[in-house]
Length: 281
Image (cartoon, rainbow, N blue to C red; front, side, top):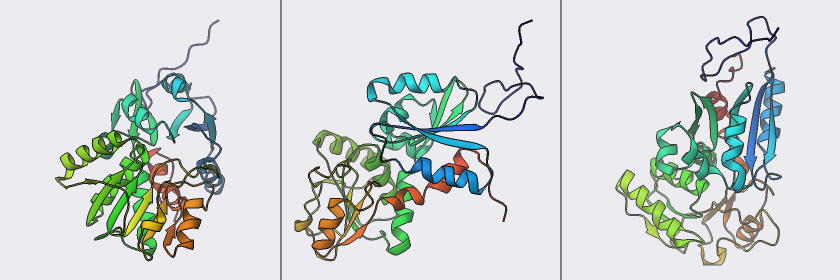
């Protein structure tokens, strides 16, 4: 006799297994290319063990060519509870999501997806994590900020910086069109005059949101020699923990801010987004 699955309602819109079946381990995946630099699996798997949550996060190397197919295939996995999205897929994730938060929609990028009816629901936590990490040691309110890299992470950080009340924001990137496009979206959302220019002597906080620095032979994304000696140089890259950009910035007398803070300060928000149980007080 053929076994038929129960069609009991599920918050994501999928069916669940029969009520007598044992609970399945919740599966989480982080998708990127490259993926070796990703810290999320280690961070979340430690939290799963510490908080006694039956879940696991696995890294998956997926090229841009197959990203859409990967999302479609993963949506058919019954115990798939959520995805973390890293470079270079954040913009594509927002394009493919069925619904999204205001910030994900405005930035046109998403770094977390959860199952919803007939697809994925997305949100964007990079900017929130970056700003939270910065304000632990110093404030960005009233600062003159310059951001290099206008992809998914750069968009997230730029929107969060404006929300945090920076004095001014300039954008720069390898592709000037991306900087202009992001600048137009920021102007439309906030009414700010966003300049398109590289970091210079007027910059208080210079931020790298490009992938440059993951490899030791990458060129420096920011000319640290052009910065004031007391400027802060921040990197969104998490591995290596101390990029060549940060080492050069410190050598030039600038303050530095490592990329690990951006993840560390968004973990709890992603945890809540995935609907995971909160630890008991």
